Image (cartoon, rainbow, N blue to C red; front, side):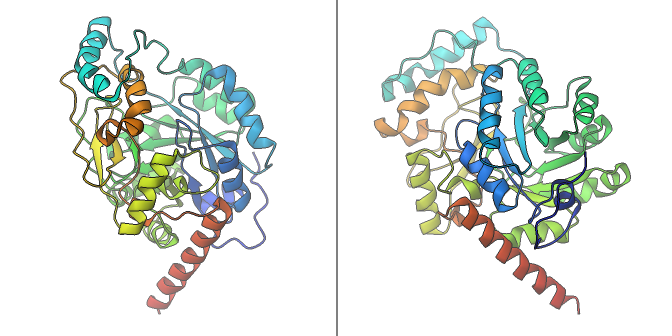
Length: 374
């Protein structure tokens, strides 16, 4: 598929900007569950970065309408993201035990736990077919490897495949699978870790360590590497480029934009973190049984992992009504407002204003690097 025409004044040119015709080597991270509205994705793409729709929890039959809503607002490239979770499936006994473990917290916030969580995440095969049929510029994914035949099917439609790695071994597996680019998700990233093994230890690698480990192999295979995790400013993007990345993926930075579907309670915490200049975050499996980084409220107790967890996505389905009631009940430890370790650098701007600011910061940082090389 030919690359899009470059914007009139790209800040810097990399393999990522050439591939999608971007003004900045930046991907607006997909954030499932509501933040990545059509307005945010289209606005990010229109402003010159690669917008991304978080569709992991979207039913296959609803994906076309979401993609078309973005296309109604922009003809620029964008990505659609899915969870390629390939872990074990929770059995009935496991779900029942997890349900019992959650009952005290549910009672505390006044929530009723669901009897059935079979629809906690839509069937992946149907989601993939829906995305392929709509053929966005890119299909990004996390939590695993592409299913058999997907690399060829995406290539035939001109769709870039963007995988996610949290360890060097995962990165090598993705290179071997034939993906076009890999997001190196560092441990500082907000929301779910893309780790393949849901029952493994918490993520430990930062994106610089992943980049160092994989740069030579990725270059030999012609695979682009994208830095992610804790990057909030153009200076951070410049740091990723200086280390050899083709670009950076930013998620938390976009949560406070006007177009994002970020809930009021979430916005409030991000604003408080920005005012304090620091956001306290923690990794927890309590809400979905997968490691995910959440933002803590002032004085909030650390979330306690229940005695029993049902494998993802069942735990996500069980805790959904608890999370829906947590703010109103005044129990912040029952709420999963995801954010990365850089949340204290959040800025409340329209998406176009944020991208413009990122571009200014990136240009200034690159000029500084150039001066230091003289």
